[in-house]
Image 1 (cartoon, rainbow, N blue to C red):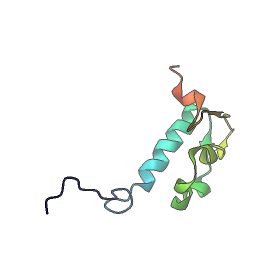
Image 2 (image 1 turned 30 degrees about the vertical axis):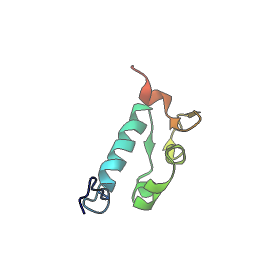
Image 3 (image 1 turned 180 degrees about the vertical axis):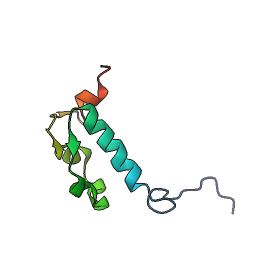
Image 4 (image 1 turned 135 degrees about the vertical axis):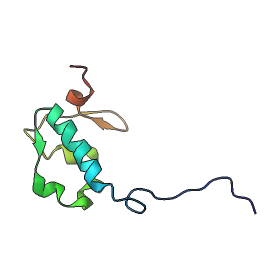
Length: 80
């Protein structure tokens, strides 16, 4: 039998990317003028939460706008 596709779970299986993901989220939070509590970031299990819930931990909270299928932080998407 010949396989056409190979799938694997890279994140957390082949590489521990939790720190990199937290760094990206912290970068976005700083772009919004806030930051995420370090104690909250110590638990990689928090990365499984929806992004909107994670951004609620940004202090000061920048607010969120929602779409039908995703949440975005407007300050991260702005060109300024």
